Length: 349
Image (cartoon, rainbow, N blue to C red; front, top):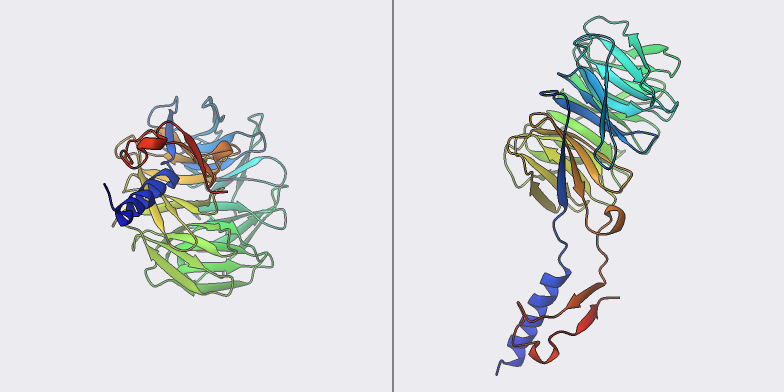
């Protein structure tokens, strides 16, 4: 006969196992164009995900059911990358090689806008609070702004080298990363403040559920957090040298990110607790990531030539509730629940 302490310990173990969240379901969808090298991805106004194809020189659309449509970009070898939804309901994207900002409607109609500075190498793009699109210029170290009518303004006051990704912050400003330097903030009036990051080489950036900006650090394999006051905290990812890339806020209140070299999707809570999930396809090189309309995280796999989906447990991608129905069939807890085997109990409220 087991002792009371043994039974208590067993009950605690069984409860912990029962209440643990199951791992997310990962699904991958192949892109029709071979070796297309999918890059940026964002949610469109039509409930589909829109992505760019760097090698394929196309903009793609994928429904939540996995149906893919592709649209060839007018400029050859344009090098499309980051993509964002504009205030006009169109998708706006950067053309690194074409040195342009591109626009595509949900009907597949393109417009392209050449940048004033040659060889600027645009990199990141995001919708601003002023209704314009804001973008970075990697080589010329500028931040650009383009209205939905196509009027472009450039701000040359970036001292960090290689400004990369950009996002709208909770403070009405735009926040951007830099491959060499740290994190920058630019107001819609063009005033720039910059913050050095200990490990440098920052990449993806997003606004977190806690009102701070969260970003990836490719050199240090860290996830960073910066408040709007400029206070920086860094959290080390369990997998070293994983090259964290894109980052997005999930419906569960956590930050989800890609590990380009680690071949994983990572999750970190606002308290710095990590979980990592290996992708089905080896050496897939996951890069950009965004939240879909179905509550799942959608991401691009550059080397695998696929679009991936991380479905969170629970309805509509939300975590399963703390109150879980259990059928105690005596597996892990055999012997302790023998008298109650087959009965259903409700755990939690």
